[in-house]
Amino acid sequence: MSSTYDEKGNLRQWWQKDDLKTFESRTQCMVDQYSQFVDKELNMTVDGRQTIDENIADSVGIKKAFRAYRSVITERGQEENKYPTLPYSQNQIFFIGFAQNWCINAVPGARAFMLRYHVHSPGYIRVLGSIQNSEDFGKVFNCPVGTPMNPQKKCEVW
Image (cartoon, rainbow, N blue to C red):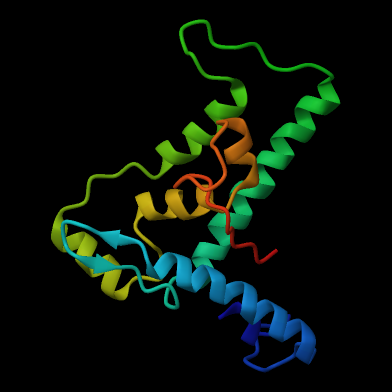
C-alpha cells in the first residue's frame, strides 16, 4: 500500500500514529466496498485489498478532475453550450465520458485473471466504485441518496 513508502520510495513506516489510523480506516471502507462488487457471470468478487491503491486513485482522480473542470467554467464566467442533439448537461457529459473511457469487452478468462491477480479492478467496477463515492455525480444526475449510484455511505480517503 502507498502509505508504506516514504517520499524517496523506501519501504518504511513514516506516518504519525493518528494519521495512519485515520488512513487505514478510510482505506478499509474502500476495501470493503470493492470486495462486494461481483462479476455475476463468473461469480467472482474483486479483491478490495489487492486493488486498493488503484481504487483510491480512481476515486480521487474523478473527484479532482470534475472540480478542476468546474473551476475552469467558473473562471470563464459561463456554462458551456449544451449539445443540441443530446439530452445531457455538460456536467453529465463529463461523467459519461469518464465511464466510456472504461468501456471494454473482455472475455470471461481475461476477467477472471484480472479479478484474481491484477492490481486494477475491471473497468466497469472502476466506474461503479468511483461514481458511488462521488458526491458530485449524485448531484449532477439527481440520484436520490440511498440508491445504488448514490449510496448513503461513501468512501473517501483524500
